[in-house]
Length: 142
View 1 (spheres, rainbow, N blue to C red):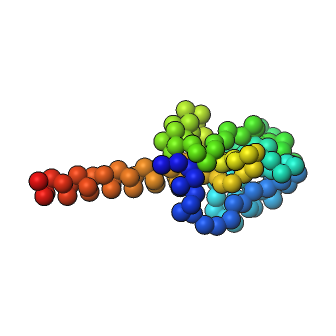
View 2 (cartoon, rainbow, N blue to C red; view 1 turned 180 degrees about the vertical axis):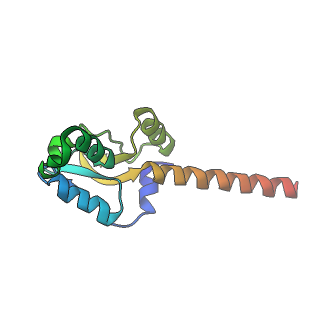
């Protein structure tokens, strides 16, 4: 299955922030929406990712003053991305190898989706459970 098919089954807004947004504002958005990361946009393009990890690392390195800095100064960049035709398992492997938890989905340079490792693991578990059930039915009827 491709990322595009996974995105078809989802509805809802993709939350993002601008590179000039303060870290404080971005943290508020992460907390209020109960999400772990935001794609960071600059000139209509994905410039990077701002995640919970960025907050923790920067607070440790710079202290509370970092909250008043722009997200563009502390985000992880460049963002690792995938296209809609990327296979879900390929994306999951990429996330595992790169030790990241979020991927912007780009088509023609424009962001068309944002997936988390949780989205991909959920798909994989559902697929394994479906295959196991099909195997049980096959064995019982054979």
